[in-house]
Length: 384
Image 1 (spheres, helix red, strand yellow):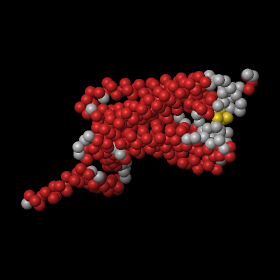
Image 2: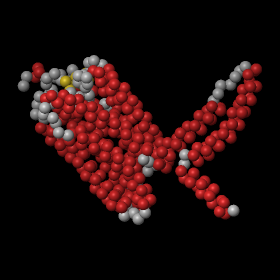
Image 3: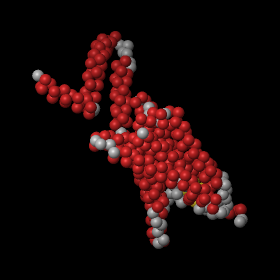
Image 4: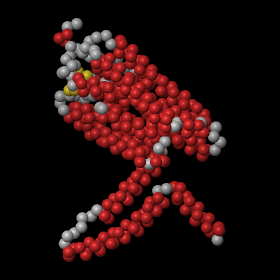
């Protein structure tokens, strides 16, 4: 083949994105930007509360912390590039930037698959073998598990990216996607890609099929154990400990199956519409799943909600203290007396109002305390 038709790596690639639909670009820029900010905020708060709250120093929340950090890295590897493409008319990406973006996306995706299977194993041990849980899921065990998931994902990404980037590229170097998605990049290759296809099939078996099978078998044992619990309250509590993880797994793998499992249209008139739909589904998969993960774990997990409330309460206490002692002092002697009087009132209010508000806040927002107060009120007349 004539080497003059090959794309020079220095020239990079052109990302097509939504170039054929310019009216949609501004709308999707705002929408994706807002979702990206929610991802950073939600996952950042989840990482923060699991670090600061000692009650969340458990294997499950250690894996959850890794998952949140992974989601931030995954979206950061692609979303800024996508947002930039919505605003710039010339949607180019250098060869080296394309390699980095492809590497990070592959690494984060493969790592998340392994990490979700490890979280399923954690729930299996906690529910099916609770007495052995402290031994099986000790720190000496779950930390190497997490490190292993990152190592496996990065290794797979190195293999897939290096195999793709060693290929010669021909034609107009236009990638019909928002990012350097590997299938779109391989279409530009002017060489045999059978090795790439085989390696991707093997990787999909290892990082998609095996984790799905492992998670499925784990939840079969989990559900069977839960159904053997005699009381309805016990079954509800046991299921609540794994419902958030199960929801995340269904959203993650369900979206993947929907993306790659639907049949392709052979009608050329519908091909453009399907191409646009495939791009948008891929785009929302890259941002919706990381955005939903912290929401699901926050709404369906009492420990996380309690840790967030404690963090907010501590922030309120800190702000009150800073307001009391951090105000600038007046140098005007006429205003000094007034400020001295105000400082005394603020100090008095701080010493009384804060303990009073803490009691009210914890009473109003804590079901356990409210139930205990009601029981005390109803038992008192009986005692009298």
